[in-house]
Amino acid sequence: MTTNLRLPGSPDGITLPALLARNATDHGDLPALSWREGPGWTTLSWSEARRKVGVLAAGYAALGVERGDHVLMMMGNRPEHWLSDLALVHLGAVPVTVYGTSAPEQIAHIARHSRARLAVVEGARELARWEPLLADPQVPLERLVVAEAADAGAHRTYGSLFASGARTFRSDAFEKGWRETRPEDPLTVVYTSGTTGDPKGVRLSHRNLMLQTVRLDRHVELPEHAEHICYLPFAHIAERVLGIYLPLLRAAHVRLCADPTAVAGAVRELHPVQFFGVPRVWEKLAASVRAVLAGLPREQQAAIGAANDTARARAGHRERGEAVPPEVEEAYALAKERVLDPLLVMAGLDRLVWTASATAPMPLDVVRFWAGWGITIMDAWGLTETSGVCTVNSADGFRLGSVGRPIEGLELKLAEDGEILTRGATVFGGYLRADGTVERASDAEGWFPTGDIGRIDEDGFLWLTDRKKELIITSNGKNVSPALVENTVKEHPLIGQALVHGDGRSYLVALLVLDAELAPAWAAARGIAATTPAELAAHPEVAQEVARAVEAANARLNRTEQIKRYRLLTEEWGPESGELTPSLKLRRRVVREKYGALIDGLYAEPHGAP
Image 1 (spheres, rainbow, N blue to C red):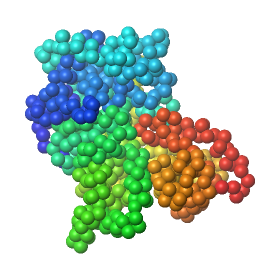
Image 2 (image 1 turned 120 degrees about the vertical axis):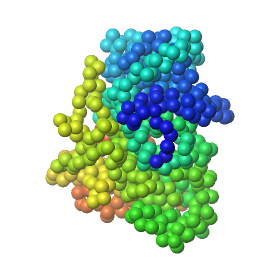
Image 3 (image 1 turned 180 degrees about the vertical axis):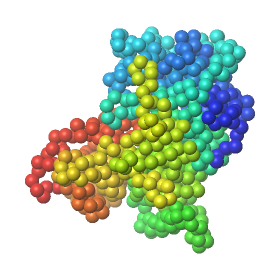
Image 4 (image 1 turned 60 degrees about the vertical axis):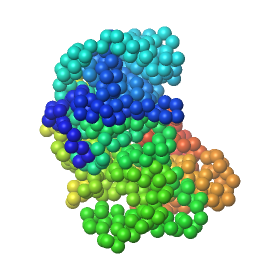
């Protein structure tokens, strides 16, 4: 367990404001929140953070925000966002963060569905999507607050809201107000990112999320008050837990990283003891390391490879629950000191104690890659509807490739078709309806169908297979997990992204995307002058290597799972172009629609075409 800090009540009876009050009292001088301003960092202590939260709460109250109101926010990971979230909770209001990459129609749906009268947005880019909603008679939105004063125009600025709060703040009213909050009250509504259809509003209570933080904390050993680099969107349940709720439980130090693409630089600067990344983040980091290694002399590559093998051997003993043999421990210590640590220091990864991933199955080759550096990624699994984590690997029990065992108080079972069902106090009460009521999503016995397919081994570890709705059923009735096939072909370092298609067809085809970091390094090491994605995809040697990658993947798959034809694309998929969700999960429907003609063409090609 990370912390033995005083809890202001039983885990199922505390609220988020009670944790902030405790932190200001018990740990008031410790750093709570830091963000970049110019070349350095600006930091608030826990006592300073609580004072600002109180002032902001008064400012929002002056705007007419009341208990139970939904307030929408679309800002990056900046202090105005973090502090506003807590201020609204102290009023009994419900903060709802919207992904910054959301399309106008998604924003309009959430604004209508949530019935929010107020939205707080970052600047001009966000205003362009939100302003038209003020004139939409179907949207209850009445007012916008803008964080960037220069972009606000006629709208209220965050600075003026804070100034208004400073004038009207009353300590007695603030303290009385948050104490009226009950554990069963809603703490937030998180709209799912919508891989299919309109986003659904998942309402989570203080009890849901406080129990989640306490139980998750018991699986992690960290120094007290450890730093957390906060770079994922607050619209994602993972960052809400890791960047807001867990830090309040642990009285930890949150470092806001406003630009997610700058997270590698923040890691190099801060040398964190903990780091969470969705699978795509770990894949990109691994690709960057591989690209650097590809340019090293063969002798150095051989030494690193030997050190990686030693680290993986040690991880294998730990994974099996065995005592690490003294000779393996000694060899690892030597390899770590002489080979691994000097390179990890350069990347800022040398102090890591806890590393984790979630949201989608982690490719096993990526897990094994990092194990070779002494970094054991503790893969976890959960959903927005389960307040985050359901199962987790931890130092006292893990299986690389699995997503761990259930956290305390959570039950799992498998339906006849392999769908994972779960129940427990961290499972949400239901989906928000447009009229403000909640639609129950669990059955009469409390079991919630997760939509994920998996298996549970004899030691209680859960292994994910795929999303139930994403399973491919071929024309001859065979079920195929697209994630299994995609992750197998992506084990080749040249392949960064893949989509497999074959529903209702007699065989599978695939769209493949070169890895943006590793492909140019691979080409340069072989004297290939091509550098752009289009040039690389068209180069004969690249095409031959991709063909070998598909052939090698097919050799490990059964006949139904094998890729018969494929196309190599020239552009990487991302949230901005729509193929990935903001949490970097593949939007299969979008990809299939965007490349529908190309996919149909693969089936129309004569037999034997690549």
